[in-house]
Length: 193
Image (cartoon, rainbow, N blue to C red; front, side, top):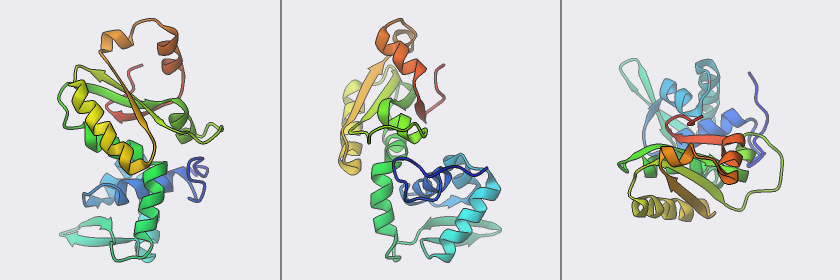
């Protein structure tokens, strides 16, 4: 299934291509094609075709371990650094926040909401000025704020975390109704509705 160009970075051919590039260029791990497809939420054949293009362009390099092909960014390509910069501000918050938050105890789920999530979901509107993050569970709020501050510096946009328990999130308020009915992008775990 072909997807449209992403609103946050319409220079990419498709939303899927942008997600795959983010998974491969922003994370520090070597990934198999299957792992990259899973992280980018793409079908394996689509990821396989995109990986072939990226290898041909020299943006990725691969290492074979037995029958497995492990992929990583080609740091010697003149395209890699500029692509990373674009990805950091367009799709980077999801990848970087997942990496920054995953080690914090007490987080049950985390997701983006608001205008940034809307643009990632293809809902037209003005470019977002910040990234709204909902963190559910009982983490140390100071650790969450510190992680968000680190990501904020990398993506050049304010990251605004809201931390609440699952019970608080299931409560009733105008704000929570708006969050639950609006677009959201999972960062850790599943969306809680």
